[in-house]
Image (tube, rainbow, N blue to C red; front, top):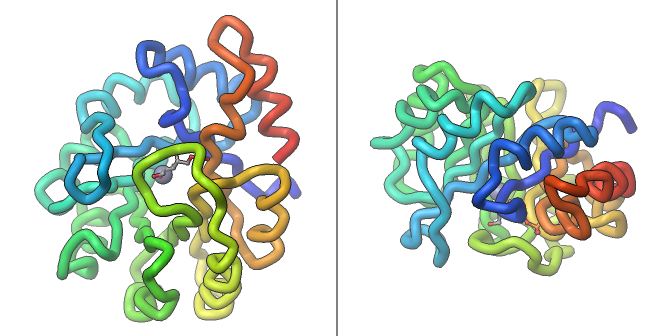
Length: 218
Ligand code: DX5
Ligand code: ZN
């Protein structure tokens, strides 16, 4: 389905070559570039911050989709918007004021996403539906690439798609997306598929063709 967007996660890219990796995945058919920001506090891993996003920006022609796995979030929203993020997603579990956070993301000029950990119910976004552009359903516990897809989340996607109705909101799936799991979430109503290990496996900036094969297989 051509309306399904594939968003490779550069968490699985070569960290010494982010610019070239972004150019390679876009040339091989990626629709969005997914950027995982981790703080070693909200999640048990550390990646990078706004300055790295800013360095990547000129190498991304399409949508730069920034997934913030940090707490607190609010003090950093403007920095990520200024770094050129098109979409900024914050976790509903990252603090007591997700409504304020979503307002701040839009005020900073980015599209607003909310991300839900696997243990967080679909209903938790009910009062945010008129102010978000994207809901990111985590299908692994955030922090690491290459984990196994949590099947209970397919039902959550179905519930969210029904709750969303005709609002123009993307449902993004993040974690364990493979050619086997992708059709399950697409059928349930997802339209943006993040994939890290499944896209980058077997390829490199010197040999990017496997990226394209992997994207087309999803
Ligand atoms: C996990 C990140 C994901 C991750 C997905 O915390 O948010 O974006 O990179 O990696 P795979 O596709 O390998 O599960
Ligand atoms: Zn992510």
